[in-house]
Image (cartoon, rainbow, N blue to C red):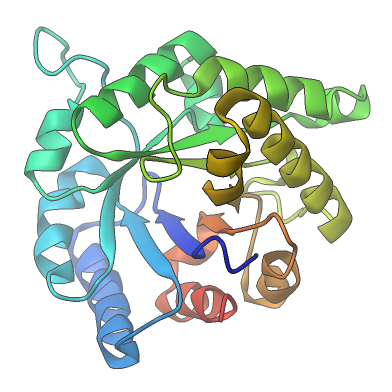
Length: 254
């Protein structure tokens, strides 16, 4: 991290939790944030769609921002099971995750679709958290940087700036596996992503844009990863489901 970029810790709850679970987790995090008063980081949590409205009420006044895990690229229409970014904005979301590896894999989402969703997020006034990352097979084949460059170039919204877009590098081989990139591996990819952003957006925006690490970050390794010059926070999965663990990761930014 550098002083030029404010750290962000974003929690992705994925398809986990019932109303009672989310109430307990969100309430605990809200209490932590209120006691902290002026934290040196931004915090975002992204529950499943049915829990967004309840969580929005719990987070009021805490400073924690609400995010969604996906969105459609149209503002309305005949799209059964989908949710528009305009509706997400309307119920209190500030962020939306697009292009997560689980969406790319489980729903066969390609870069063009992800870019359409990111464009739509910006249209609705949301900040897009755009995910990119390579599989273990791609890494073993020496394609880590080329895969991330392709996904970044193909998924980045047209109007991307450091204010409306966050990049999350999530090595697919380290998601939910307990494996984690070494600090050097993480820094190398983050630095390469920032170089690619410089070519696309120019040095000013690239220097200010936050790049999060999203592969099995937890309290035990957070401080070392977050100390890297081009790692500006984390997109947290499993550890985001435990308030104490998630808070410990956030405090590791300070």
